[in-house]
Length: 292
Image 1 (tube, rainbow, N blue to C red):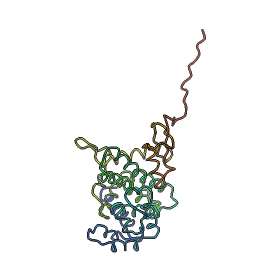
Image 2 (cartoon, one colour):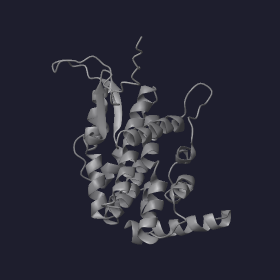
Image 3 (cartoon, helix red, strand yellow):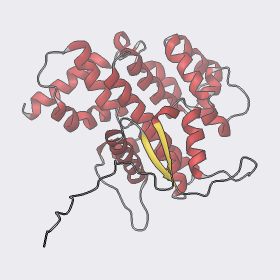
Image 4 (cartoon, rainbow, N blue to C red):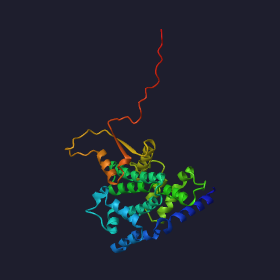
């Protein structure tokens, strides 16, 4: 395909996928979240315009132990969801959950979704370890969550509308998913820094620090490589001393474990202790005995 044909094809995918008939809600519904003067009642009314299934999942995430540090008590209104998680997080969650629901029972799509959530959780932890402010750590988290949205959209388009279209192959998805993600960022008025995340293919540095998109890329690539090597698991090695159950000290590995459990992803995390071998033993080539 030439450049004009590619643009036209991406136009078709966007038109088919980003509409009320496909997503279950119109993109304009979320415009209210961009209005700084919108009142609590106006924001609350959004829940009447998205599906109950999406709404239940968003509330479940907002009430998970993962977010307990930014809320007080159980969240019971959509307005509380938005004020607790932030409008951009809520927007991305609604979009990605709508795609996940459309792709139900599709194992490949399920793993892509899981990988993006794992990248978000791990990316935020990584950002905190780099000493980033909490608002920037949350940006890394959002970047991880959004990182595979273009891939999900293209693959879902093929599944629903173009199962025999040979133009959509692995090469096409790898090459053009950032461009579709860019369109979604503009369509839903999401932060521009997400464009740097989806287009970045390397660790991005400023004069004396790694940027938000650089740390996000570290998290995304590490998760992708680990999922590839270890059968869809994030594997981390914990060399911290073993502590008794009465010890108040909590290792970083335990914090990671708790955060994965809090969002229901515990089975996708494997913590190994003290240089456990990940590969089978290999004796090497046996030396031939020389008879003299």
